[in-house]
Amino acid sequence: MPLVCVCSPKGGVGKTTVSANLAYALARSGSKVLVIDFDVQNALRLHFGVPISDTRGYVEQATTVMDWSQFILKADANVFVLPYGEAEEEQRLAFENAISHDPHFLQRGLSTVLNYPGLVVIADFPPGPVPALKAVQSFADLHIVMMLADTASLSLLPQIENHKFLGAPLNQRLGEYYVVNQSDMRRNLSRDVSHFFEQRLGDKLLGMIHRDECVPEANASQRSIIEFRPVSAAAFDIELISKKVAAIVGVKVGDGEMYAMPNPGI
Ligand SMILES: Nc1ncnc2c1ncn2[C@@H]1O[C@H](COP(=O)(O)OP(=O)(O)OP(=O)(O)O)[C@@H](O)[C@H]1O
Ligand SMILES: [Mg+2]
Image (cartoon, rainbow, N blue to C red; front, side, top):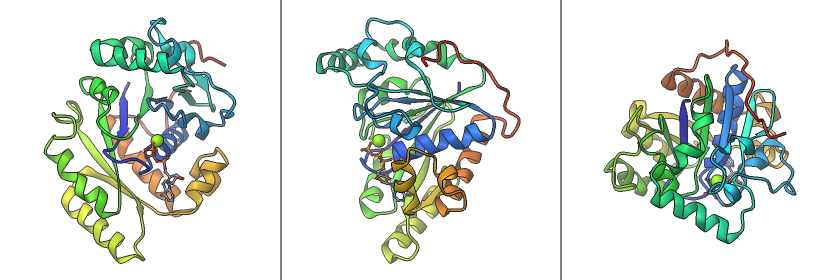
């Protein structure tokens, strides 16, 4: 604990990028962090140096193995990843079916990691109101909703605010917060939309991330933005957002104690 969920009604808005870089930033501050991939694209692991040929993951055995912590891979000194893996269609459908029909399925599979002292868990979701997002609603500590600084994202904001996205408030504990990504103050529309988000969301806006070429470059090199280009605007933005997340979930910054994960996979 805590469990932080990164989600959005929209695809391609930076959910996976932010999940990964938030994990790196929190780990740099001394926390032990686990990232979980709920997306069949299985792309989150690529941010942590896992080779593309490494198809391991938890989904293929999720309905037969009770404790999914054995599928965790160690990515860095303080960073662990639970990849979705390359499951067969049948296994994926069994996983989704279990999520939809057994309200305790996810919590049971993740109970070791969710109860691990001091571990920060970050979950990356596919776009939209997917069953996994509904299933974590009752026990997630915080939701981060990713938006782009564009009108398409803006038009989806009422869905979240009016609880139409999942049919209920996204988060029942610390609430939902927002990150506006790919903000570009040189472009009129992006600047106007960013200002609108700022005014409308107030304290619920964790921060904005500049559109920055070093983001896809860092992703391509399988490194964090902070390590790849520490003086970039995006690295600065992510660092700031990670500090706010740490404060909201009550994670101490700078004096994290080192724990050993059980069964760290590799
Ligand atoms: N701040 C940024 N500046 C420039 N490019 C960015 C930024 N954030 C993300 N990107 C790029 O945008 C693309 C989409 O990012 P990402 O895959 O993280 O989005 P996603 O929301 O997880 O997508 P999906 O819905 O497919 O899961 C990637 O190519 C990424 O490198
Ligand atoms: Mg993604």
